[in-house]
Length: 168
Image (cartoon, rainbow, N blue to C red; front, side, top):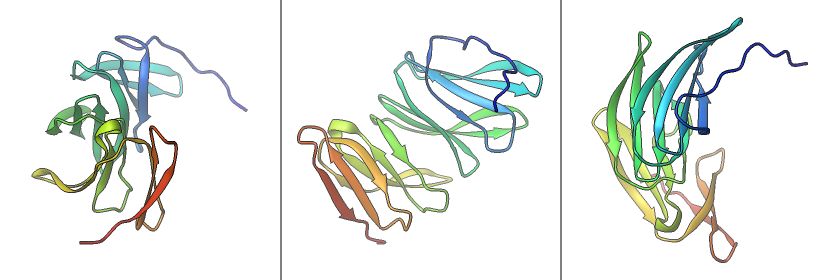
């Protein structure tokens, strides 16, 4: 079963997205104003909370990927390093993000930009590089486990389209 350990009020407003660190007792959350905080916890309860960044716009997604913290929202996709308990900004991409998919072993990430479509990016130490775009009003996106097919549900019609992803 589940046993309650502790509860806390998030800093800022109510959380819209949050993620747990894959190796440390730490959660990161973001709110409607684009404020992001990290909150440590232990087996006895919540510990110290700290501010990571303020993006001024609504949060849509947070994820830890490939030793990075990725923050996304309406107008930004940002990466941060995490070392010795501190977050440091790495790269910012000024785009609208409804959602993103960044598979653990993939050489690319897919960004659902809603009405602006879907974009594929490569990420390396120098930042984001756009690889391809689909210009259609996307509602949801899903990626096959083999990383070769993308499903996109469209906002207006509700149809689902399947696309092959080339390895070029």
